[in-house]
Image (cartoon, rainbow, N blue to C red; front, side):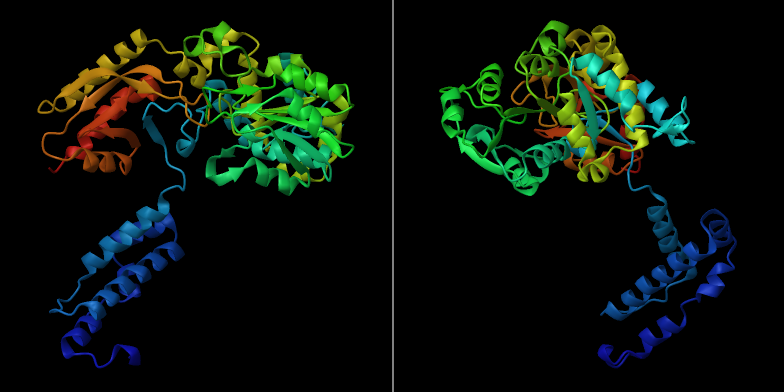
Length: 479
């Protein structure tokens, strides 16, 4: 007996002696089925954990102790096995209305990208193999050609996210030299990652100019020295400063830098591949700079995210002059930051839609959600309300207006008029219902507002409407 537990009373001792052994539990027919499904070692481990939990309960219970039978131990073991069997990533129905919800994986992939990932993941592919010559090829050559065709850039390379892209650009092109950047653009992105920290890790020397709200081209000019390598523009994707503001245009920065033999690096962050105003996305919002505009303005290197406004997989896309992209590709960090075959396949399939802007808006889920009209959303909300009412006749659901957001650090402050279904549960609190929906299968993540559960149909796919109704009905079972 463990001396730290002190003397054990006879009641507890009897309860411990009555516990079945792992060997006897393994002989139960139900457990034999578990062994077939999960393997002997996994089941034995679950049984031991369940027995340990029961023993701890016997020791820790200060009241009367009742013998614990095999059935309770098996219930615990089965719960342990079910928890272990659950994948680390679970499918979620996004009913929040936040299109690029960072915590929910940002951009959902288009159908073609999903198919491409499945095909490439299931076997071998020509990731770094030239099928014509039979020799080693370049990992991103095909995607790079497509990016250049779409943007007008000379060359392109892709890494695993935009923070990595910024780090690699600065390390490869500006290490131990000054990079001039506006104080108003020293942003913090998700997870407390900050541009000054990224720059410090790159080895570049940060030279801040201007003020938080006003930075003129003369501020850049006055800061340039013989140690300067580049001027850096960082698009403030996740916030806006309004009022008494001023910032140098990209064309001004390019003229200033090129007259002195310096580079201009443009970190676009969210990465709109085309002019949203011209395409009618977001009702013609024009505050998001396009990749093509940046390349056309003469930025030497441009980088942006693949899983934000582009609507593809997580990636950091780098465009620019051939000799600069070549230097970036040859840097040792490139191997550590490169994209894998599945992300490349998804990115390639997504980018192909951008050869026709109308097709991109229709086929890329992110763009389709951002450009959805209130009329189409009202129709979807009416269908969801009908499904919910049919599933639960005793509950009342109300269709109404609300506001969605792009999310993912994109288009801050640009609210999107949307249509939602509101539900004030009759017997269970809204927070409890939201919890039950989150832990259900599939998980449904909705908003809670003023005692109501709110389903924003902007981010619910058509094929998910009936699933939402089923999940809501299921979460009320047993009440």
